[in-house]
Length: 331
Ligand SMILES: NC(=O)c1ccc[n+]([C@@H]2O[C@H](COP(=O)([O-])OP(=O)(O)OC[C@H]3O[C@@H](n4cnc5c(N)ncnc54)[C@H](O)[C@@H]3O)[C@@H](O)[C@H]2O)c1
Ligand SMILES: O=P(O)(O)OC[C@H](O)CO
Image (cartoon, rainbow, N blue to C red; front, side, top):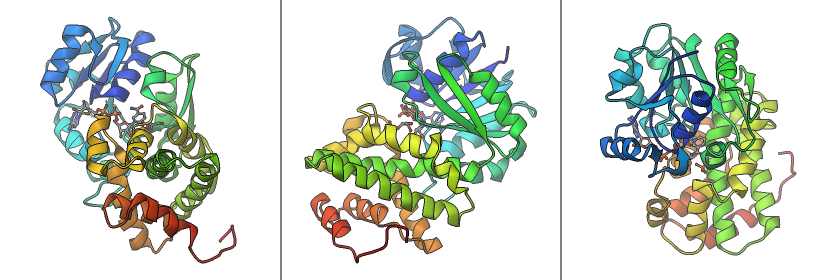
């Protein structure tokens, strides 16, 4: 059995806690929001972000960050991407030198345009860093519905250790060493999911959504290849798989936010209404800047960026995409 410390008791941190705890591993979970932790302890359930999923006896609400991390063999970070750096830096003094570090946040840091592993590399030995990603909504994992993800690390032994830790007959885990591809697939699909939601909210049909998903994957892959990812990763679970689930599921925070924007709500109001982190709202800006820096064409990202910034209306974003210069599909 391994002792697990979790930093970030949102819907995903809580759902992942149930997976490892159900296998008999003791879990301690901590969050920066003390009131939220107190409600979890009182209800023995994450009433704020994952209602209806009871916390089993192997899950303890940590009294402090140090309490969560002191003896942990594995530390899992499930704070939103823009908070990963501060969460990691705050936790580091309490983490054992040989503990494996997992991150599950999907995003790009706005201020630095860094991926999560690049942030980790600023402070950690990367042989113990593992990203866990793939098509996986907390609401389904919490109900033990079949789910498949991948763990990515430059150290395959670390990725395999985390694979073993999480594998159950309801939660299947693959491994890969393409950290860049896994991170970009997970982060950038949220932009396309916002767009798919806008399309749905405006009353467009399946044709439009299929086009957004396919051309979205094309531009995600284009940026990924420029940054050193492997093309096949984008055809896998953490690329196409995650794009499909996020663009089609009503559980998706990004898609729901997009739907409300498509129906006429302001981006800010829609984000607040979702009530949980809508990573695409942050990643769109970061990806737009990254694409410009790298000289990579990402027209869907650009259209969504302009709509979020209020430079154009959602309806005009569609016009902007449909009236671009004619192209060959493979260019
Ligand atoms: N929810 C899902 O189904 C799901 C699935 C896969 C990946 N993810 C990714 O996981 C990350 C978290 O998503 P979520 O849906 O659980 O978010 P959420 O909005 O449900 O919860 C985020 C939690 O992080 C806490 N937090 C913020 N800053 C913190 C810090 N510095 N230290 C500790 N805790 C902090 C917040 O208080 C909150 O409880 C996102 O990057 C998301 O893309 C989510
Ligand atoms: O609910 P979303 O849109 O934040 O997506 C969550 C996960 O990334 C789906 O795999």
